[in-house]
Image (cartoon, rainbow over all chains, first blue to last red):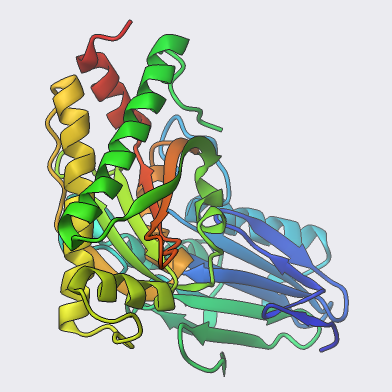
Length: 170
Length: 205
């Protein structure tokens, strides 16, 4: 991959912030989610058209009264698939990988549903994938450490860095 | 986007900003009492921020930091976070324990306990000042201390805030001693729900 490295990112890196869903389709471009804790990064790579999408899911489901945005798993995944289809992808050519969903809640967290937020995000993302007829071929989920994940859209390579460790390919 | 409640008057919101600023300054003063060192606040600033921008405002989502996170028992979506770089956190432990700066080089049980106690005391003072002023009694949860990426440290807090709102008024304070500028961040993220309950019980019109 080309691109000058600046503070761990290349100049062609696009950061996918909390609750965002982004796409990239040019050689040398990468998509990255920084410092994932209980959030889940959903990475979809179209191996035929060499394009990718990444969703930074924060919460499992959009509740009534909330604006439906990709921060919710049940909004992000259908939108991701729909937009990749519009860009020429077929579901069968998508390589899906999942990263994040760590257990980050303090031991004394006062809210039980929130204590399981990482786990609930994982469950919600997998349920949405099943509903859409998709399946992840690789995952780095759970645990209790933060992660940064990158997708090189040209090669489809996904790398994961956990705090204080070297990057690993997924 | 869901916004902060707008049912409050400008006077109420201004009084709220003033109250949390005084409470944050009071909690930094508490560090002086705890450590016996003269710890001064360098900056105490309340501001509105999109919840998704909080990790960036506290140093960057993938920057490794030492975080102390507390909530309050009554309201899940209220958070107090103390964020330091690892080196600074080690300095803070030295200051708190009266050790020569540079003594602490990692986080063991004792160091985690010291940082947790710092979180207890700062949040306790903060909430006591709010309680004394408004009559609204708030109890902090036990602290959680961890070294990780800033985004990951804050993810639980952010997820709980985002269940309720997309924007909060956050107060950020940095502090240090004359000899050692600590550059820690004391960030208080009151949810609109809590802000509403406190303002309603306060009597400011």
